[in-house]
Length: 270
Image 1 (cartoon, rainbow, N blue to C red):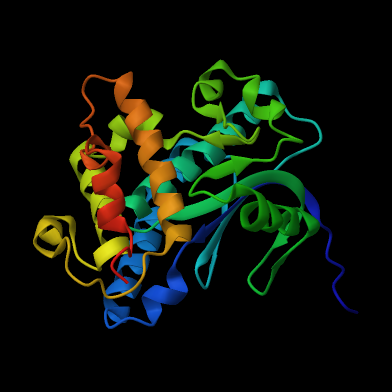
Image 2: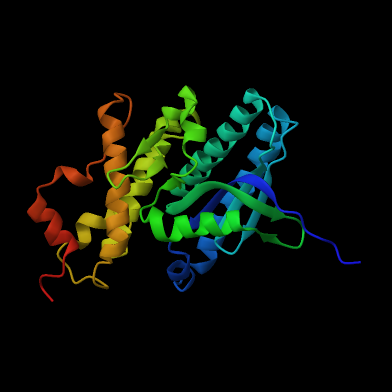
């Protein structure tokens, strides 16, 4: 008799690694794959050593497929407030940690958190909850941010602890401000270097340290403003964070006048 799959309600975190297609077509394909492998290995290690030890009674499901990763925790119909709080905290923590870990490797990510029917086993991963998370990530998130489904965001905002980390963006979408917890596990200077390198590579295909030597020269391609839009969104988030945190290192990217920025980014000589 065929097995009947019973989908259950889960907290679902779906994350997409941006730019994978382009990175895999470049000469540094192996280097990029090693970066992704390192991110996945470190995430798996953290799950085993921290979350599964601290929250022994909470099963955290974790699946990697292509350039996507899914975390899920079953949401029981009847459970204590403390148990609900733990699960919500884990999902937000995993989203923050994974996105910062990828950013350190100069990889932008985008994702979504929702609640819905879901199933994951050794053979498959499916459910309308997963479809909802994918649609939110691909159609609504837009920027390199992990958003929270507006339909269920109150599950998270009732916690004063989580509310400090959740922001409502100018477009009305709730997202996780990853920089609020950066000081606990990450080095400011590494994040800053990564942001600068992502910006520099987008324009001249060169690390930030070499940027001044190539400014004004013929660029290898026209600037990808779709990607640059996402980079500037993240830089703006970091600079806003810096204004309220004296220990943070401010980015120098936006300190130049607007005309010089346009000359570096643009293709006015074409």
